[in-house]
Image (tube, rainbow, N blue to C red; front, side):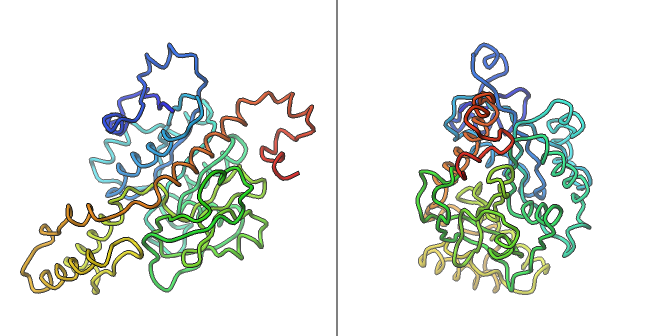
Length: 354
């Protein structure tokens, strides 16, 4: 489905170069296709900020509904940015007050870099939770990614994340727990998803609060769940948006932290991400790095990346396609037909749970 470039956001030009359908505002105005307007609250740290834009835009573009997508990046107040990212936000991100007056159909909220044990003290907490509260009554659905899931669960359900013994990161296997739900329709019953987090909300915590579990994993826990109605809030503890190289870049950043003394131990490999041959190659690199025989700049990026298999992208696209398709159906359905069918139009997925 086409994304409309209604401004000069560089990420749209970038994904257009990759072959993704991006329409100019002029072309969009001459096509008789319905629109969806999706907010994008990007709370990721500077190092991953622009990559996260592109990753989610790619997933949105993969949806199959016949509709034009307008993505509205929302400025998150309170987060200090480096000069380059600050300039980018000032140029291309919209103020929430303007968004409120214009309205949205749905919102995507990214994860964020966990800095404090108390989420209420994070720089984004006040503004993000204000947006969460507004969205609850003014948009069809919100897709919360990783830390955003933990934030909304604490703010609105009094569910608190729990620290894990060690960072959970890598590629993990999951199974569909509720195959009848339309968000996971027509996807593999078992599939992989990337994770990168220090904290967790358990399956039991979701169940105790009558939230709907859709996808779980033996090692990674809950990957996908929804609010009680089945759609208005979609909770994802993983990172389905990740590129093939995302965890590799994160691994390299942790190596840099080790070299600079920010961490005392050399980072472990991300789970399930690298083949045994690549791990052997990187163990050799580690030994040479510790002996000062090589520098971080000598990291064998191309060799490693060429050996990584992406085992999650197609499923991630399918989930987002299902989500956006449902947003479209709810926003464009004839509400009178819902009443005639005895379905409450304010309960979008009631037809699947009667």
